[in-house]
Figure 1: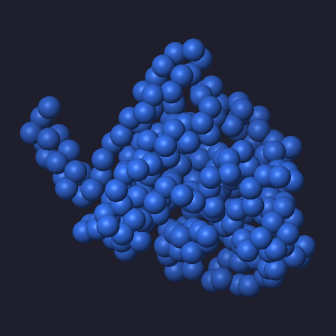
Figure 2: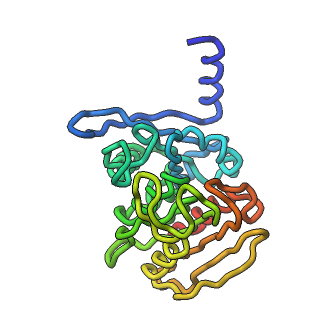
Amino acid sequence: MTQLGLFFMLAACNRGIHTHTVQQVVDGVTVDRTYTVHEPPSWDVSSPLPLVFAFHGGGGQGEFFTEDLEESIQSGRFIGVYPDGIQNSWNMGREESTADDVAFTHLVLDDLAGTPGMDTENPVALGYSNGAGFIHMLAVQSDRFAAIAPMASQLLVDQEPQQGDAQVSVLQLHGTNDDVIPYEGGTAEMDHSFLAAEDSAASWAAHNGCDTTPTETPSGAYLRMEWLGCTSGTRVVHYRLEGVGHDIPWDVEGDTMGTLVDFLVQNRP
C-alpha cells in the first residue's frame, strides 16, 4: 500500500468509517458481501443509536454515502449502514446480479445485532434510483424496516404491498423530467414496469389506511403531497420535483438529505 493510500485508510478509520464483510451463497457459490458502517463522532455506546441504511444507485457503491450523509451523521442521532450490491446493482428481478438482496440486508442486520451502541430494531432506509426501487421491494418483502425514503424510483407494477405486508412510512422524491425512470411510469431500464410516481405513493397510502386524496403544499419550486389520517400511525409523503431529471436536488425543504434523515428517524416506532 502506498503512503497516500495508508493515510486515507487511517483517516477513514478516524472518522468512524469501517468496512464489514458477510458471506452469502449466490448461485451455489459462497461470496463475500461488503457494507460500510459510518459512526458519528463521540459516539457513546451506552446510548444505542438507530440504523439508517442507504442503498446506492446502479453503478454506485455504498461508500459514496459517507460524503452525502456526513453532515447528518455529525448530528449524532444515528449510525449509517451502506451496503454494496453485487456488480454495483440491486436485484429487482432483471438485474445482472441474481443475489437475494433482501436476504443480504437481513444478514447485515444480523451481523450488527448485539453490537454495543447499535439499535438494530426498526431500522430505516433511503435509496437512489436502482437502490430506491430496491427499498420499495425490501419494505414489501421484509417486516424489519420501519420507514423508507426512495429517491428517483417507485414501486414496480404487480409488486405493490398486499394485505398482511408490513406497514411502513414512506417519503418519495421524484423528478417530473426523469428520462431514466419516468415520473408517469411505464417500462424503463432492464425492462422493469413501474407505476407512476404518484400512484406508487398512493398505493402505499392505501396499504397504510391513509386518506385517499393527498394534501398538497407548495415547497419552494416543488410540490409536497401527503396522505393524512393513516390508521397505522405511519406517514406517506411524496415530493413532485417539477423540472428535475434523474437526479436529486440538494434544496428540498432547504436540505434534501437532512429532510430524508429527519423523516426516517422521526418515523421509527
